[in-house]
View 1 (cartoon, one colour):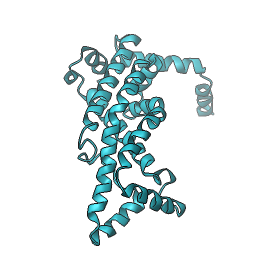
View 2 (cartoon, helix red, strand yellow; view 1 turned 180 degrees about the vertical axis):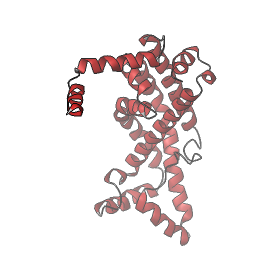
View 3 (spheres, rainbow, N blue to C red; view 1 turned 60 degrees about the vertical axis):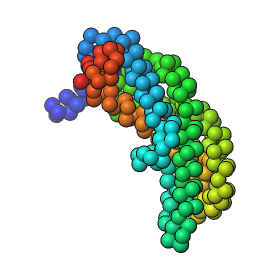
View 4 (cartoon, rainbow, N blue to C red; view 1 turned 120 degrees about the horizontal axis):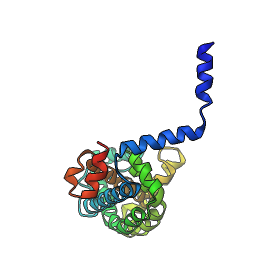
Length: 234
């Protein structure tokens, strides 16, 4: 009976008190930092991470030479490529995969402006969400703010880069048939859209990695505001 009364009492705690406790915990986690300092620190971290990611990926072998983001043929087609290699068609497969990754490398620099704009327009609420949201919070922020417009920006650039490869049209025909049988995701059945999606996945992945580095070693970031904000979280 006493346990039931205790549980009922806990459930009766007003939502305002829960919110207040959450805010107090957040304030304690940041020590003497103001909301403005916290937001400035997050903006600096994200802008630095975005800049590094674009520089790393938007160059020759940025995708092709990085196993973490290298764009392969999707699922079923990758398995089919293994068979083609066995009959001496490996060179053509390599040509297509290289073209896909080169297209991504050429498209990525076009993301810099939108990424920086998203960071600079970040609200204090966005900054709080990133500081307290865990290791995927940065990726979630950029995906929400930039994925749709970057898809529109990347697609024509990727199309221009892949149209030069004769296998691109064959890929689309084969992938389209494979998608009809559920062997390839519908969104992967067009090489231009597939490469665009994978380019953005790789971009967000590297941005997230850069942000984690700052969290783990704010002193090594070389920025006073980053040391102040992320140092307070350690």
